[in-house]
Length: 199
Image 1 (cartoon, rainbow, N blue to C red):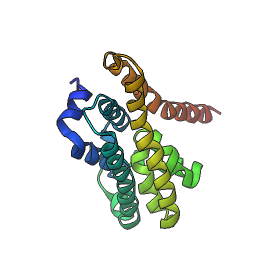
Image 2: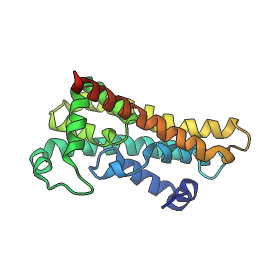
Image 3: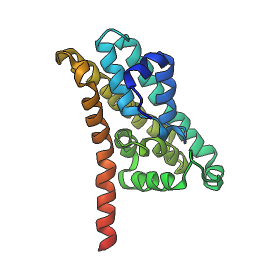
Image 4: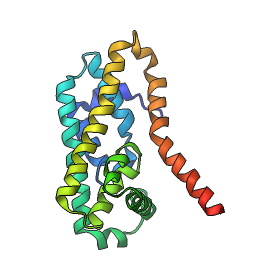
């Protein structure tokens, strides 16, 4: 089923954007949501005066930081429950394992890098909690990552909407490019993994 993101953002408004970004940044079912394209589209609509960019950016940053914080808390408090939880459409242990490898590879910086990788960004804060990362250190990376990803992708949509004449005609291809770029790191990671397995 085709979803028109512009119409979707219009329908859900600020509160809907907040809760979707919040969920994607830390609730184990949040990987189902299209965070990158949603933020870009919301930023674009703000450039067209459909949303207030200041309100939007504020809510997005709060949602990204709060979502990651809840994910961290879940990982810290419910490690055994998560690992014993029966797999379903909304929860797969392979996502935890992938996020764990990502975390082990990049350390605390994974909390920043993961923001730009779909699925991984949902589970890395959970893994950080499981690994008993110190909360102060976690929050430092959490805030930096929240600003870079949440504000960055939203402002990208906002400023492109400002500088490109009749940008609404190019919204779909631009969103497709954003989606492609967001999954590119994951594709590269899988390719590297396959090369290592062949060695």
